Image (cartoon, rainbow, N blue to C red; front, side, top):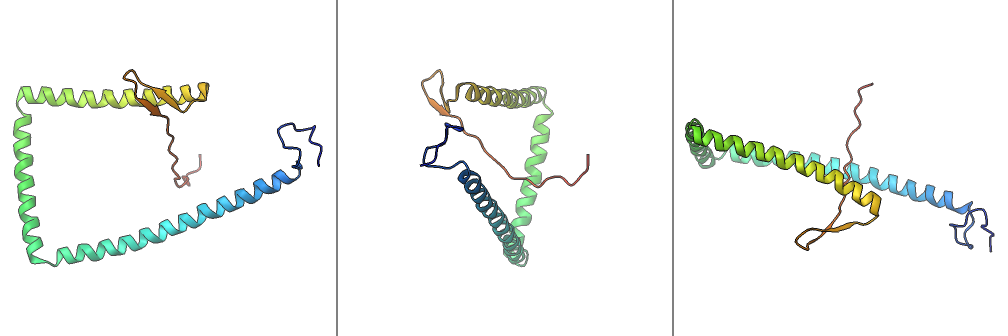
Length: 153
């Protein structure tokens, strides 16, 4: 058995020299998994693009679809013109502005809530919170991988 008096967090049966190698191996495996999945996503997106183009070509070459598409576009134009006319009315314009302001308010409140929840989780270490109605809400984080900008600062 190895004596781990230098690092009490390690089990007695594990040598401190063993951990970095395990971590490195796990990291390399994870890195390879990420790279493999990125490649698969890219390949699938390429195939998807080709299949979408083929599907679009079928629709573009079908006279019945083209006729219906033309009628649908005309209907959208009529609908948009009617909407524009209604929005010229003072009462409708006021209501539309209130809706826009409320959407902005909800977005700002949601952003603030996200910050408060993040700080609550950080300070408490708890991943759940109960709202005023007794509903248990789980704190969930999302991660996204994005291409790093090539611009130099």
